[in-house]
Image (cartoon, rainbow, N blue to C red; front, side):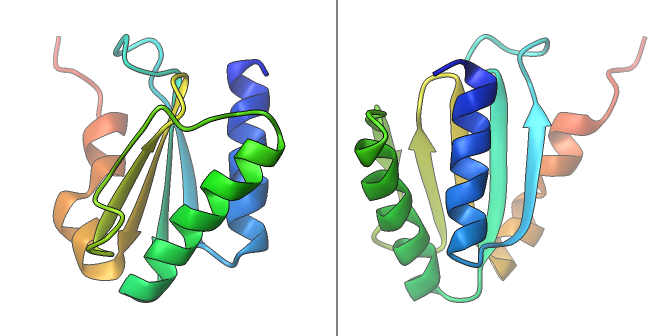
Length: 110
């Protein structure tokens, strides 16, 4: 899959499982680590884990294997690395604390 197709597939799976406030941030021009960040929120630590597990399962069915995961067990912030797309699944409190959208969408000062 192209990075855009990968991002779209991930968003569709998260939407299907009722992830909250899904945001897609194109980061390819600002970093070499990925083309997109997909950020969303789960209502509870259980939903964060469920969203993570379901995403891994559905993406494997599509032939896409997660390269690395972090934080899935604690249910506060799960990170799933699909190479061109890095997925961040937060609980409410952790998402507000780290505010990744703000950090990755602010313009660099000249």
